[in-house]
Length: 507
Image 1 (cartoon, rainbow, N blue to C red):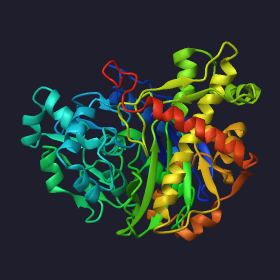
Image 2 (cartoon, one colour):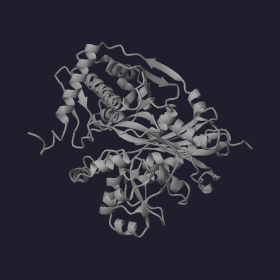
Image 3 (cartoon, rainbow, N blue to C red):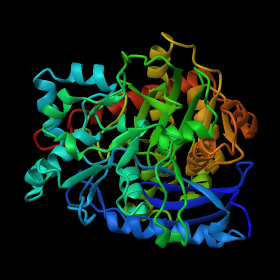
Image 4 (tube, helix red, strand yellow):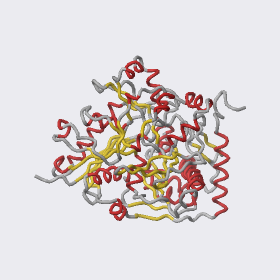
């Protein structure tokens, strides 16, 4: 019988669920994926069907293992990485979920967050959690569920319910309800976790009226999380890693040294700067978060979160119907007119860092009768670059207090296969951009953490030594042209802010 010498990574994302099997050298050898439908009950509300997530997870795990010679007998451990902040509530006795998952993009709790800011609670919340007060995070979503699902609050106070982010929910289901746990990276995104003490915060629980009995235990990112129920995959497989998707990508990109930085381009865009053992307080509305916690030692990061990156391309395809697939955008952007006056601000669910404007809404500027599909596609890709530029400038101002920003940006995620976009990113940033050989760095990070715990991948230095660059993009745009693009972008962002397009917005 074949010995277990591979790692299976579950990557449950916003728009898809996938499983990738990695060998002992960290190379992907089998994969399976399913798209995840989005649910939009009202404007600004975004939900997922938890049972669809669970069905897809079982399906892709089975599919990936089936493509591996020897199947599940070859899987030494499972690592899980996930869309962060997405919030679920379920019954401990039956495992039944009480409501659709409320997705990180959801803005239904914007009024609650404004009330917290008005009462002066924001500064203390940020000091403890490293986060800004925003509907993005789990705490206000969980409060909404307790207040709006019939009987939920009373059941929670009786200890009958469990809260979790996607990692926690999948762990519960995989272990047959035996393990209710999360890791420090996911806990750090709830707005209920003190990142300095590394524990749930009783004052924040009281502020959000959340019973502590709802919460999972918090463990290292590479740890013993139990084993899968033997009935699922034919044998019990150890689960040895949990990590939020951006933290997993940071590991997959081998950003282990303070000052190293990566940017992931998926549904949203997330730039993460490793700050080592120092939890740097941001003065530019960036997030202080846990990069990973290994062997009881916490590594911190500064992060900037963009809500809409690939989601803008998805809107062009599914909402407007002007493209058939994301793959078409590269040629269309390259064929657009040279005027570059069309600007898209994709604030479909508000603006993330460093603006944190829940009321902002998307807009297109500079349209004329000459504007065509190619110009709009280019504007959508340009918006991704400009939003990254906003984050990099803010990180530069914050990071200077801890480490000098590096001379290169490592990129990953599904969008980085677009050469035009990567060159444009380098041009807009004025910074070299490096694309790795393995683009699925989020899954790779989960596998790396799982393998690290069982001794398969050795030290972090060994992991860093395996990272390989596939291509480097050097900036070619002159400084004047870059400044002109940035000026157009900043003007457009100012015009969509603070609910400018709502009926009760500014005159």
